[in-house]
Amino acid sequence: MEQRSFRLREIPSEERPRERMQRYGAEALSHAELLAILIRTGTSNESAIHLAQRILNECGGLRKLAEQNWEELTHIHGIGPAKALQLQASLELGRRVARSRLPEMVKITCPQDAADLLMEELRHYREEHFVCLFLNTKNQVIGRQTLSIGSLNASIVHPREVFKAAIRRSSASILCAHNHPSGDPAPSAEDIQLTKRLRDAGQLIGIELLDHLVIGDNRFISLKEMGCL
Image (cartoon, rainbow, N blue to C red; front, side, top):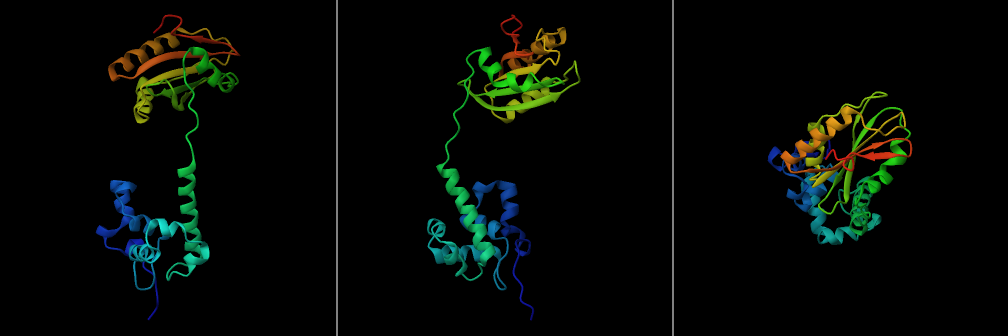
């Protein structure tokens, strides 16, 4: 009889860890289920999830598994050189995440702070780029996104797009900026109108628009300082 290994798709649907992960998230899976997703296939007479559980049992748990070297992993029945490397790579990534520290967050205390963050990037573009900074309750930048790239003299962005992105990041407030390819940061009537629409939308949603900067060639204008907010 031909020998074959069990793949995850051959496990009954109620036991498939991939489907459970998609539906409930990785945190809902057991150690064995997560391990089964990594090793992907089992042996000729056991499924991937059964092999995963046996690996944990033979090693004495997840922590002991993490201490195994490549040669020790290959001595486990069902773990060949490729699977051993996959496991070692995954475990090493986990260790690096555990050791890593979040980068120091930039805090926005005034329009100049935001201009310093965005000026060198935006001032050289030949098209208008509309960028949004997302901030937490301490006014620290937790994300940024270019939401629109326009023509030489117009950038089209809708408040819906701005606040959809802000909500996705659980932002407490936002700061918007766009460049004028001409180098002149003087705001247009459309810039002022957009600023007021963003302000009003933010008030309804509960996410404050801190400012809207217009970036020129090494110059900028704060629409908040102009009294538009």
